[in-house]
Amino acid sequence: MSSDGHDSLRDMVKRAMFTGLDEYAVTDHYDYDYKDRSIDFDLDVDEYFAALTSMVARCNTPGSRFRFVRGIEIGLQTGAANIKNSEVVSSHDFDFVIASIHCAWGCAVDIPEYHENRDPETAAKDFYDYTVRCLEEYDDFDVLGHINFIDRFTRVVPDEDEVWEHVDAVIKKIVDMGKGLEVNTKILRVLGGAHTTPTMRMLQRYAELGGETVTTGSDAHRVAEVGAGLKEAENFIRAAGLRYIAAFRDRKISYKKL
Ligand SMILES: [Zn+2]
Image 1 (tube, protein in one colour):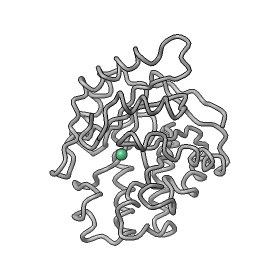
Image 2 (cartoon, protein in one colour):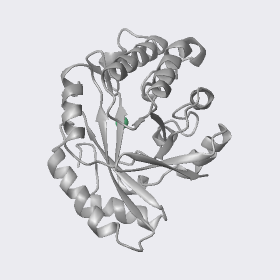
Image 3 (cartoon, helix red, strand yellow):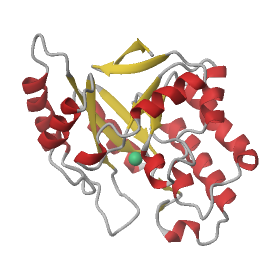
């Protein structure tokens, strides 16, 4: 139901069942005051939540192996947007909340303006610094979505060594807050498998600092993408030395062995 979604909730859920997923969270994108005027992410959350709730009634019947999860992806931005995010999240009984950064310092990071006066490393450092700012201000969420989202939009992938100190601050903050990290497979489709979200070094650092809550998401915007790359994501998580994958219901975590 968000502006960049292509297919109906019903068709997405049918596909999730058909592909054999045990559990499927739909997390439409709510991003108040999104900083790209060509698109509007001011989702009608009441209408969206009602649609999710009717899907729960249809899917999560006694004896059903499949479970539908009511989620949302909120876009963090300092100030008014985070106040809106608090209102939206606290006034609906979501099972699962992803917090993501799509705009930084007053600009959407997926548009050319953000990159005009920034080389890839500066673009990334500024993005991570802004992420920390948002996390200092907002904590009503479960996992941080696509931590290195910026890597999809820079001319070349930023040099990880050069930006590491800034990335590390984000990871430390997430661990301190007791939050999870999303392994998002969209980048496999965008960059043809050459890069991951997060990178292996990021995921290992998260684990090294004691983080243990990792979810997988295909970031599907259409039926054909539902569940894409999730097997690869699980292998990736295992390779990072983690043994569990997190699931959420009523904002509470449970862990499933990989
Ligand atoms: Zn996102």
